[in-house]
Image (cartoon, rainbow over all chains, first blue to last red; front, side, top):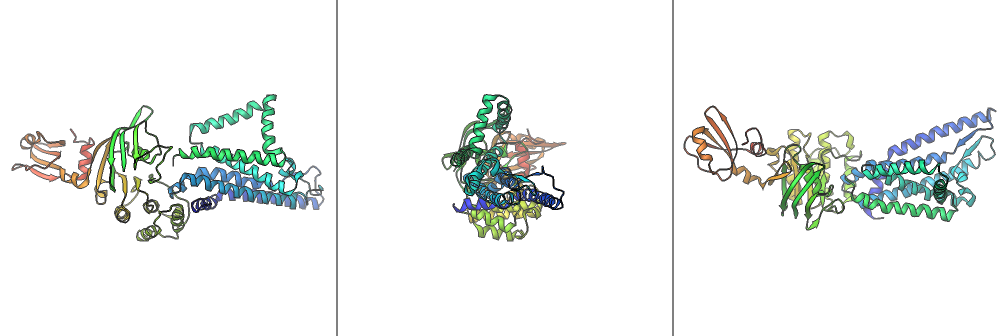
Length: 234
Length: 281
């Protein structure tokens, strides 16, 4: 990574405090809820149906929020400091890769240290966690990390690209197209099958296919951001 | 260095820039003057490649400029540009990391001279100080063309004077084209060398400020003595009070007859008259 890209990555890391704050707040709220549930269970107040949402999901908020804040707020300020458009794209990608990696790692730790230990036998309730739902855990700890990393990177690039074009007519067209695709494809069986194949590829497929699908799509979105940023008004 | 060749910019049915042709071959501080809505910001955004021309060609160093080919060596800062809420010193360091040719020493020296507290965060600075910081960061960048859109908006008289000093210091340290859009012509005249007046999207005048100062004058005296003198002169406006007339002229100075006074018009009055002020005819 060259000096300028690293400088933009540092600026982006420093200036997404809202993402850190909201993610932290969500985690604190969820940890408080888990503590209450555990204490109630220890007091014999436990409900058999008690199913919670794993902390790992809430860590994803940091990646999603960063991908909104970086193009929406940081681009103009990086440009005002003399940063170049291409450097901004690379610096943003570096941040998403690092955040996705960090989040995937933390989420994997939460999964193995909490979801799979405390909440495995149902004594304190059960946890709905991404590695179980998407089947990543069936392929071992490395798959839990890498599959989650690849998906989060794709998620970040998707949100980043969509946010970057909101000031243009084609941004609104893309929003409309997304809503249309979901609302039209879902009720029509053959189209629903297409949608299902797409989500299977990026979430449920075996590790190699899922990781490759996510990374290829993320790379395509990154390539697409070049013409978008070439025309983006500071 | 900079060429506008028959450039037009239209927003729907509104023509913001109307067939402008202009050449800026040399480095210097240029004052871009015009009324609100005259086309100053559009002119700068076209030159920075932020918007596309409807017709015509803009080149910087021989390379065509457009949103898909933004010139690397043109820095544009709009009025009210914001920065990250970081300490002044951190922002200068970040700019130095982002730009290969950034003159960090110049930026720090200017920040100290203009009493910008390097420990303060951006949001703790006054409006004027925020603008001053952004201007310092922009001027410390050694790009070949700097465009400053209404940089003195919100400045008090002392800050405006400091700003002019900053422009001169910067240009002396790093000669290049600096184009400043403003309404305060008399103040920027202390720093700027050339004047570009834009009105209704067209370039009305491009000349040296000293030349304008020399050529813009007023003939005043009895109307019956002043009126005959106007034949063959470029009268840009006149006012009459009773039998006394003041005619504002742009052109080579004449030797007035006895009873008619010749006075310097002043840049502000020149601007008011040439863009169609009250006294224009």
